[in-house]
Length: 542
Image 1 (cartoon, rainbow, N blue to C red):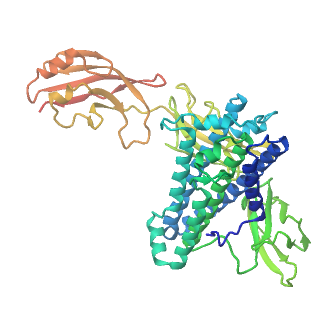
Image 2 (image 1 turned 90 degrees about the vertical axis):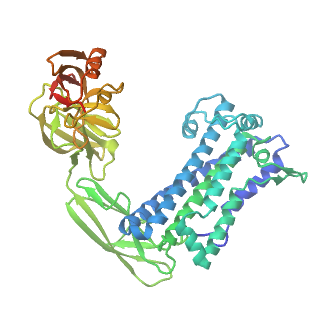
Image 3 (image 1 turned 30 degrees about the horizontal axis):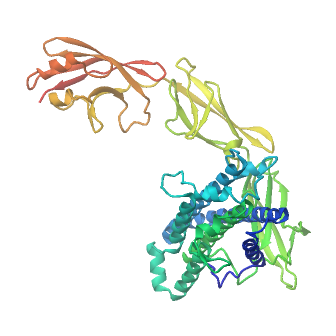
């Protein structure tokens, strides 16, 4: 983890700081269009930096997760902290994004659903020079029901985030701080940096008066400057998030950064597994990079492009290996490297999430995936019914009158063309008849094997249900539509629906101890209209 000592202020950060000093001097003036344009450019620049930082963090989280999967005991606690930091950062980042969007919509009278939608429109945001609406919005009551103004809620959110990232509550972090003086010093530097970045303390204005954080942030500020300032906080969130996650990874025993050697690094762009017909693409870089002196990379005796990308067609199935070397200016050493990637034949993996057959009149759920192909580029067809994509997977519901066999075919979009990946046959069967139970309440299901009380049988929540049992794989929904109560005396009581009617309840209450009665001729129907007759239930009163 790097703090103020390990992360000195860059020229770009100094420039941003200077821009905000200029802003404070321009508040009382009629701000020119050129200055407003400058703030817009500054905001866009920071937004691009955010995207880049977020991409690096996402990549780093993948590496952290791989280390955790390989050695859970070593990384578990630190991985948990990293995940929590990622979640909290996204939450505060999104809150600021909505804050910016609300100001834009209020000023322009628009109804954009996202800042990206606004920026992508033909006109974009038109109210950069408005100095009234940002303050009006800040002073409005927050819509989240907190009873506070938007500016007070913003300050509260900032305080919550700052407190969260600066307080050491996790046991592994506390133990490390208490047992490692060097680590403690690094953590304290981090705390100082984060407290300064997200401070909500009162500030002194040009008249040497102390004013609140809210006033200094939103009052009499041009909208363009307000949006730039909010973008600056978002950029700070991404920087701190990246820094903290790297710090947790290093604390667990490994750091992504290596500064004691120079070596060649092979970075596959689309992974090390590609299908036949696709292209394998990797970037070869030095592990310690000087952006002013790009190393030269050679593979099979040929120099690759200056960006370090190795691009080759994947024509043969199986594992492919290539060798090369890297030359660094001022160093006579050849830094050799070897790269590997695997080319697989077109294929798809289809696994039924419930059974190895398909049932008629039932929503069969399938998980379908194609290696190295995104879900949005996968298509599924079935001869028996049209598959529907849902959150749980692909759902196929064959009609009650279907052939005994069908098949599922999986297609994937490869290089702009749909290719058949697999065609798998399936058998079609009717749903089995479920068992009948008398459900007293959410916790009690009676199957007739043990004596019951009249109170249980006549409880208002009691009803006859059709179920496959808690341990069954299939849990199709059936509704009981009617049944008959047969008393030991031979009296028969017909009941519609799934609940005992008044007549049946009266007769059951009148029975003596050890009397027997049956619930028979139980009729049930599935959600697709399939009729089933269930087994009878025999009961003996206690």
